[in-house]
Length: 107
Image (cartoon, rainbow, N blue to C red; front, top):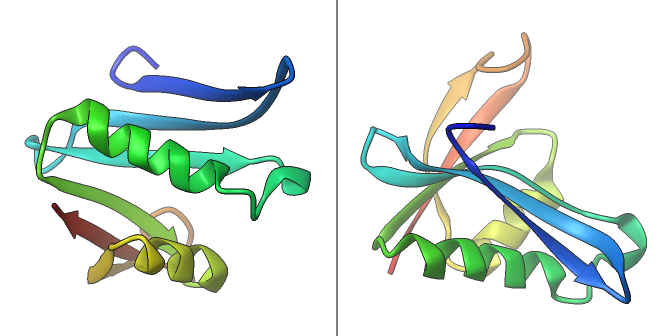
């Protein structure tokens, strides 16, 4: 946690989501969104989009990176819908048999 930033989304005193990012986590130069989560009952309400926009705005950079697992097609589609595109893939990065798609957005 000491190398990253954690922000939470709170609605009615309930934590409904969070992001964890590393400021210079991609290539020692660009923000890397390491984790994002929204409680299931709050999905589809724009909270994830607001969290990602917050991440992009607070960083002050023009390029952003994240990785999404090949089995998480819904998340990949979400990232593509807000301007991220796949720029690479790394088989077995976190788990054997699962490919991580590297996504990038340029403002």
